[in-house]
Structures are given as structure tokens and as C-alpha cells.
Amino acid sequence: MEILAFIIGVVLLVVGLAVSIALHEIGHLVPAKRFGVRVSQYMVGFGPTLWSRRRGETEYGLKAIPLGGYISMAGMYPPSPKEEEAALAGRQSGRAGGGFFATMVQDARTANDETLTDGAEDGVFYRLPVWKRVVIMLGGPFMNLVFAIVLFAILLSGIGIQTATTTIARVSECLPIVGQTACGPDAESVPAAEAGMQPGDTIVSIDGTPVDTFTDVSTLVRAAPGENLTVVVERGGEDITLQLTPARVTQQETDEFGRAVTDENGEPVLVDVGFIGVGPTGEFVRQPLWAGPQAAFENVTAVSGILWQLPVRVWDTGVDLFTGQERDPDGPLSVVGAGRLAGEVAASESPVLNRVAGFIGLLASLNIALFLFNLIPLLPLDGGHVVVALWDGVKRVWAKLFRRPPPRPVDATKLVPVTFAVFIALLVMGGVLILADLFNPVSIL
Image 1 (cartoon, rainbow, N blue to C red):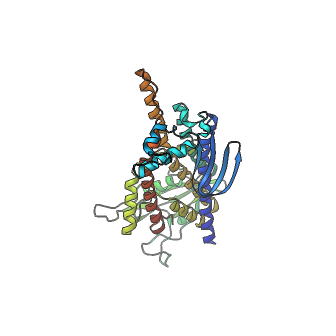
Image 2: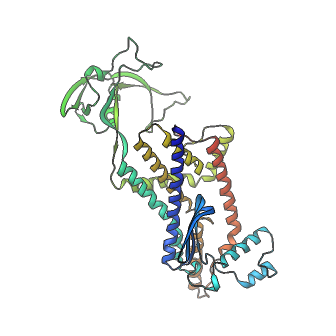
Image 3: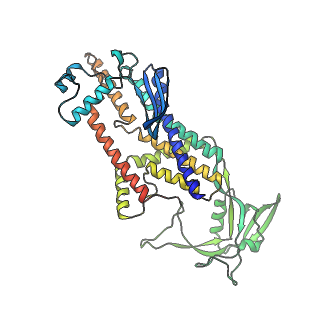
């Protein structure tokens, strides 16, 4: 059953990724058609086509590998000058001489020219004003950001954040003793039990201080070992006043994130704190509507910190892989790693709502990563096409200022070697992350 749940989680992530890619490409498609650009294909996925249907000028389809997508726009680059083609090719075959990269450049130009049917120059991308080209290219990442905001809103305002409330779920049987997991015959009872506190009681105040969360309760109790406290609890609709004295217990100190604090020698720091022996009830508390967008933009900041250090982070992940060290849980993941986490969420023993919330949070974070990754100003990513469009605009403004003839559109096919290098770098980094996610994975368990 656990294996089946794991598989379901992975499948759901694949479907969620396909939806994210589809929305990304719609973000390109809609403004392209709105601005009159001819779009011959809208495809979700790569590889063999599983299904397609033509509507008007556009073929819509689904391919076998849902790890990307694309739309094919007419005239993504300006047409090749005939003189330049002849100079590069030296013959009429259309093939370029001058080595591997020259051939790649010529192939890119030839493929682009095939989209300019019958030499028609209407409805082509490169002839649009700069701002329209930028809108088209940013439309894809923008859709991922919007989808992430919607998912975070569903997670936080629809489901809520699981919060430890002031309602008591359990009362311990005895004081904890280091090295023991069960109560012995001589074990001391906890202050909460001695005071008559019961599961289902809701703590209202401690020594006159109102408490809204279990964190408030814990803070007041931990700070008062050995002190008599007046605790008001609600039971059956009535307020009941109890007297209790928190026991003094020794625990390892933790920081605000719950991580163990150590001294300069790496030894755990121990502190004496108050303990009454109760556990809270967890409930999903719905957040305000603005919590979703706020969480999305906080996530943007966090993921940005990973992306701008991506080569270094991937290198560290590779070192951890080959040395067997534990990976940074906040480091980059591949699709394999994300799928594995989705499977673990689905196969966990948590309540169904907790698993749904975990999956939605994972998919939302994945869309934030897609949003930021596509903004990297390098071809073949969307950010690279934005840079090309802006550079074209700068050239036009410069020519206008100095009353020069309008310059030729920027020919991005000349950047094919750079694009190829970026592609190889991304391929290598992706391979390292996939190997790490297979043999040294990050786990939520």
C-alpha cells in the first residue's frame, strides 16, 4: 500500500509539472496571438507526439516526455541575408562551412527561415515592437508566478497552516527521564496531572497573561520552573482555575528554528526549563487572503538565493554525492528529487489533508523555481530572448538619436554557440542533480 501511495505521489507531481508547463506556454501563446504572430505549434512535452489537433493555423499537442514545452512562432529571428548565406556556405546547398559552430548557426537560420512561409513578413515575431516581444517572452514565467500564488493561496487561505493550539491533546503520565521511554514504578507524576488538567481542556491564561497559541503556553511555562502558576482552562464551556508548579527539567537548548544549539566545542548546550507535561492539539488555521501572495514572494527571495549560486550549489551537491556526506536540505533538486519528495509525502502516515497540503506546497515551490529559472538572461531561456529584444531596442534608439539609418534587427542565431554552451552546462548540472537525487537523496522522513 505504501509503494502504491508513493507511485501515486510521483504521478501527481508529473501531472502537476505538465500543467505548469502548459500554463507557461499559454503565457507565451496568448500574447503572441494577440499581437498577430503566426504560431504553428503549441506543444507540452518533448519526444514523440502522443496526441495533437490543429485549430486554425496552430497545431496543439502533447508529447511523451513532460519535462518542457514550446510554441513555434514565425520569424523568431530575422531572415538570413542572402549574401551572408553565400559567404558562409560557399555553395548552394545551404550548409555552412567553417566548422561545427558555423554549421549550427546556419542550421538555426535555415530552420528559422522555414517559418517565414512564402517570404511573408506579416505576423512574424522579430518585426514586433520591443515591448511586445518582451511581453511575449515574459508571459511564460509570469504564468508560473501566478500559478504559484494561486497554489499558495489555496494552501494557506483554503487549507491553512497546521498550528499547535492551546487545546490539550494529551497529559503525560510521568516526568521524562533521560534514557527511559516508559514510566517506572517510582516515576513522578507531571504537574498538569497533579493540578487536574485533562485532555480537551483549552488553556485561556497563565498567571493573568492570555495565551493564543501553544507557543505562548510553552514560553511562559519554560520560563517558570519551580514557580507557582495560576492557570485558567476552559472545560465544557466553563472557565476553571487551576494551580500548578512547573517541574524543573534539563533539556538541550534550541534556536528559533528548533535546531540544537552547541557550544564552541560542538557540545550540546543544556538548560533548565519548566515542564508541566501536556501536548497540544494541532489544527489547520486559515490565513488571510494576502498570505498566499506574501508566501510566494518570500519563496521567490529564497529560491533566488539558490539560483544565483547554482553552479556552486551543484558542485557542492556533487562533492557530497561522491564523498557520501549528507546533502544540504535547502540545496537544488532535479525533477527526480522533486518526484521522490512527492512520493514520500503521499506515502507518509500523516492525515490526508496534511499530505494534500504538502503536495500543494511542493508544486507551488516548483513553479517559483520555473519562474526564476526562465528569467536567467541567457539563451535559450526566456530571459535570454528578453535581453536580445532589449538590445535591439537600444540599437534602434541609438540610431534614432544620431539620425542614422534604422539598424538591422539583432540576429540571435549568431549566439547559437553561446546557447549551445549554456545548454551543455544545464545538461551537466541536471545530470549531477539527478545522480545525487538517486544515490544521495534529500528526504522528508
